[in-house]
Image 1 (tube, rainbow, N blue to C red):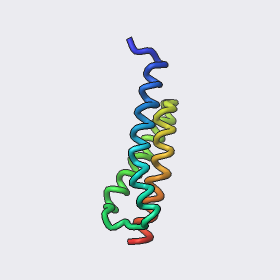
Image 2: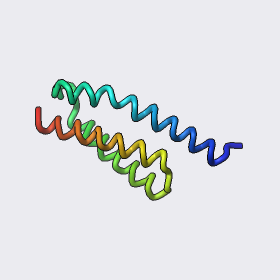
Image 3: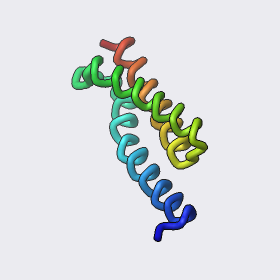
Image 4: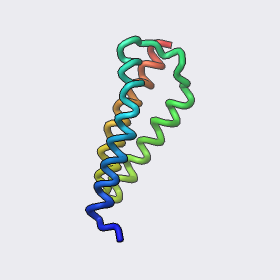
Length: 87
């Protein structure tokens, strides 16, 4: 049986891995300002989806979901703004 504490640990591990996997792309984009390979449609949908996951996490009080999506939303929104600005 999975306890609530264990499910939170799994959630935090998933949050760390998925958010950390996004950081290299964001860092590269911040450094180079090269947004040619980034799809505006994909990043728009992705950013909106992450915002929905954040709201979902808040409604459930699921802090691993909230924290991961708050960080990812900030990174994705920054890349989306750069895509709009530097295209």
